[in-house]
Image 1 (cartoon, one colour):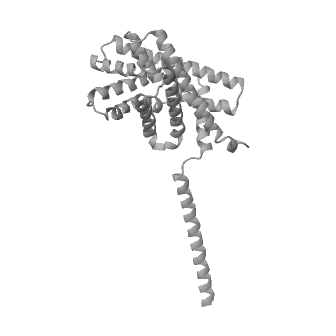
Image 2 (cartoon, helix red, strand yellow):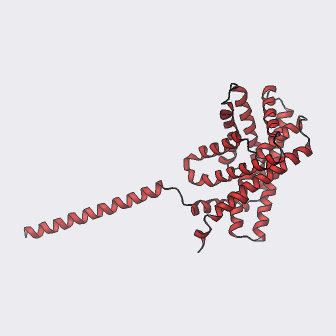
Image 3 (cartoon, rainbow, N blue to C red):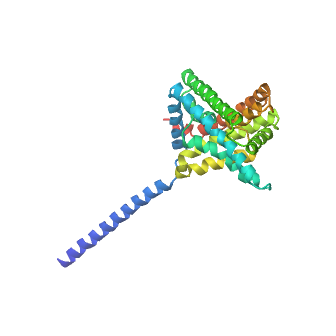
Length: 289
């Protein structure tokens, strides 16, 4: 009897140990899942669904969100100029002053406002998934409305800075100097630097779903790199171009031909033809049923 009870006790202990190991394994598996980064198809699906939501929004909503983004992005130039005039004239000054460029992008992205260069990837992915005339038409509608709204917002901000005493002469001069430096680029440089900026913005959009609480740092890092590298962004740069136009440093036709056109083309190619295609290509086989 004693040996039988002892045998049962040993069996019970073995079962308890097995259950304990199984429980630990499940807990460890859950821990691994929590600590693992999302797979590429998961990120792709998050960005694609976001693009579908944006294409389904009413035009009025897109317009006002885009206009707000144009106003917000103007603070990139303002913050960059503020840092420039308050930092000593040293070799490292551009490294720190370029962080000011991130301010407007942080306002736009964290507030979920409509920025044209973000849409070069988010709304392109749904079109790649279902390449129909209807989806292409929706894409064109969003691009046109958001681009016009963004430029209207930066134009308004440039006019506000020019026609009102909201900023002092020293700050205005620093803002104009940043714009003049941008316009030193030739047409080809504007275009190819626009490709780099478009790719970096699209990469930022791709990174955000897996960034979690580090979204602030991802946005700051990517946009800081754009400013430090002297890459050209059609919306942020339009604030600089409009200021130059209003102060007689840049003609309207020259601004459209030498800035807006090459940078717009570069941003679209960098964000769409390069990054969006690569993003879709790396997951398309995994998405097949």
